[in-house]
Length: 169
Image (cartoon, rainbow, N blue to C red; front, side, top):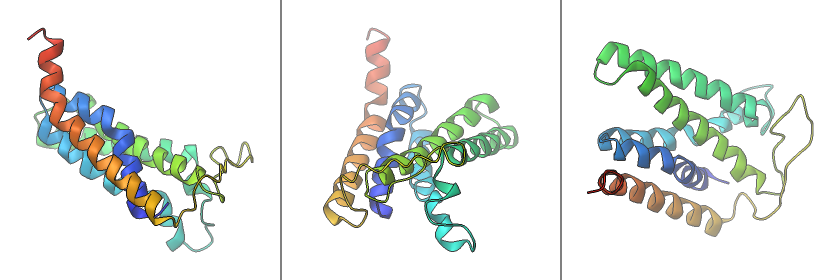
């Protein structure tokens, strides 16, 4: 996938977190989460700018997604400690979830291509390459982007309604 496709997949994957965040009364934070998801969506492709790091190598593994999630959680926790407001553990979990899901969906999107990914390397060298769509397919990338924006927007907008419905009102 290209940038737009990866952003769409990240927004789609993060939509449940955005819905819950919005339903808990933190709609502005859910919007920030959508922006963060878009930012983290292409992080694995940093390998294209790093010498000696092959494309779809270490940055396209589950281990990279876990490290990014952990670092994101620590940054979120630190931000809550500095800014106040939300409990540090809550904001840390929120940012970790967005970061991990955005990077994880990058792997899923690349697994749909013929080149695929080796998500458990170096422990398991097996490649996941479904070959359903080429990374450069403009229709697939645009569809993913549209689906992601639509789902994330709906999740954020529906949060207060979901909260009222769950509260019995």
